[in-house]
Image 1 (cartoon, helix red, strand yellow):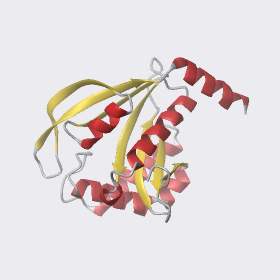
Image 2 (cartoon, rainbow, N blue to C red):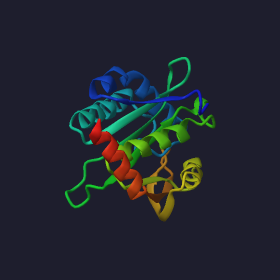
Image 3 (cartoon, helix red, strand yellow):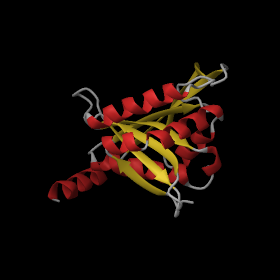
Image 4 (cartoon, one colour):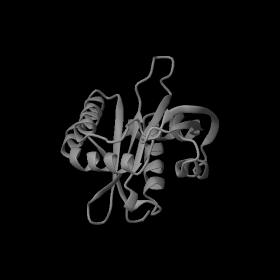
Length: 190
């Protein structure tokens, strides 16, 4: 699906317009066992609140939200780039809430989202990216294949949606300063 998935950045208003499919993705992932901050049973209103807060953060310029849709226009994945950090970390961003519908996995959606969010980071002059994921998850292998470096693991850092303790593995990726500088110059010139 890597050629079939279309990735786009959403404005705050677009996030609001996409709340329902984003809620569906979040619920699908949590019900599938993804340790992404929510417990079972996940109430729809909690998922709606989460995405409404995300829209507010997008409007404030604190994060960028991307979605991937398939050829039929169905939203099948999402990821966020958190860009708001203290003034001594203007070059840093966190990749957050990489979510792909279970029926769209292993089709290149996550890889497309990851490549796109890295490009968004370059365009925002971010050279240090950080993320965390459930230890032992398929996502770990995705990040390693994409050149992310494992930093370490915290055992029992969180819980799976059904209440079992799970570890969290942290990764970072240094984007080439020349890539960031070139992208920034090209973006500034437009």
